[in-house]
Length: 471
Image 1: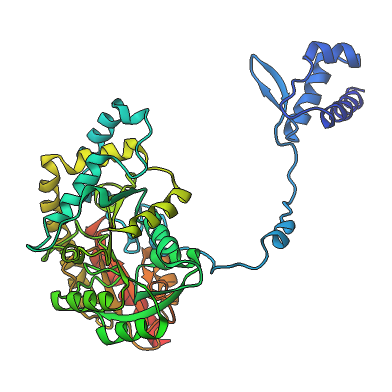
Image 2 (image 1 turned 180 degrees about the vertical axis):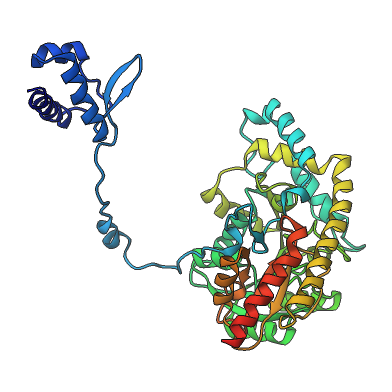
């Protein structure tokens, strides 16, 4: 009899729930006993059944409520196929560099330095001070804090030779990270459907930003000394492009640094074609045996658009970067940037400025250089011992990465999967090429965590390489 009564209450309460709003409060147990002429035990049994079915939830001391999400059903987004129509750009890349890694793996894949390479004490203190100041409650200027603009301008001015007008703070635009800046540059200075020359290989994020901007990417071959001047000149002539994206210092992924002569050749070609060079100085703070010398310091006619980020060297959580552009180009970039983000968080700007103006910042950078060198050399030695099949064309003088050529015909995608299965994360070089890869490459980051695991990681890579070559 009690079972029948309980089932009857469950059925009746379900009907009530079907017409109730999510979160509605059920009548009390006493009210249900009176309404259904049942014992408290029977009512409690019915409520337990409804709870087990996910229809209601009990909040001790408050009451019993209709669950906000009572049933699961498949989502139907078919209407979006018609609304979105054909994709206008390539699908975004799920870059290996952005993958999170478990603590028990050996991580060579990331594009960021490990936490122990960051100025943690400076960052924590700067964020505390910024949170207590006016920046926490006020809207900053669209172009950025004047003090931070001045700092970026002065940083570039220190490399400016005699006879060249140094940049002014008014030439600086503060950005929420360099990725946002690249998007604004490509939209503002190139435009949808127009040609953009890009070093090949090149930073995958720049290729992604170009794809999202709808520009036509044209690769220019680049080696350890920089892009081929003849190929660059020919690409300008044939395409009619007005912008070339490059990384003169410690390029991602290759680690290459343009020679002074190559940089001057590139600048002359850009000037002759009445074009822009976008200089991505992402690794400015990661010099090891050579400093980063910006090519923008040699140009005061507005041909070089300089972009520099503090995100990797200060903290991934402080997404602050700057563009230095002269003339109307700056206004075009600001217009494109305003459509994406009206301003950069004042707290982050204040914290970034605090960190880089502390006396401990330069001390940190000197120590960072030594740490990067020891990690780089340890990984190179380990690879020579365990992966002799991998060819390192040059030892990078800065940056975070080694760029390794594998034997012709080698399946680098299979290698990444086999290494991951064995607890080592690496990045296949495929996504750094604007067009078809010129060969099988892998990129290894020597700034990752646990450098003591580098020899073991190299051993695992070597074993995976041998198995694939013997297959």
